Image (cartoon, rainbow, N blue to C red; front, side, top):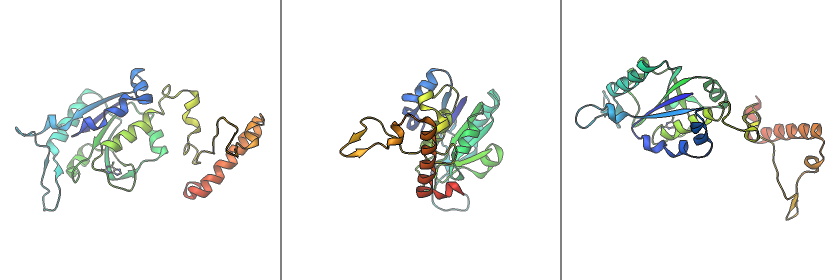
Length: 224
Ligand code: 6GU
């Protein structure tokens, strides 16, 4: 998979892809992430990328020319499955969306900034709009990292068996059951007997019951 990320602040996104599991995915060649500084496509000697909104009002708008040039240049090089705009008014990211993107080959992520992008960029290029939740960030960069992480970890070969994505919370619309490791007792707190019984069928059933119970308690909306 290849992800091209367009931003006015690409430096904000460097370390997540240079650390731990995402770094290993890059090193193994399972995912490629390329950053594009929108400023490189800015207009005039000040490399302008934003301007005042028509009709007035507070905040600046990301201009169409730099965005169109940057995206068109990328599109001339390869076919993209989606051009995704990270914006608080997009569809809220969930595991289903991450799963569906994980089977794509080439993706563009556009990080929103200021008040947003000129509407015509949406009409020209954007195929999907994604938010990471109902709160507002200073820009789409951290959201782009969240989205990329959620997708890249699903690529075959990125996680090993112990980290398997198949048993994730949300993968089956259930939260994860409680987990324990040694010691079997600490300050009077005991690990449930069943987990030490060696009866894998019983353990499996117990884990599923606990997952349902926890989901009912914490996120009943997932069971609807
Ligand atoms: Cl994608 N962008 C911004 N600026 N804020 C957000 C968001 C995105 N998702 C949730 N809040």
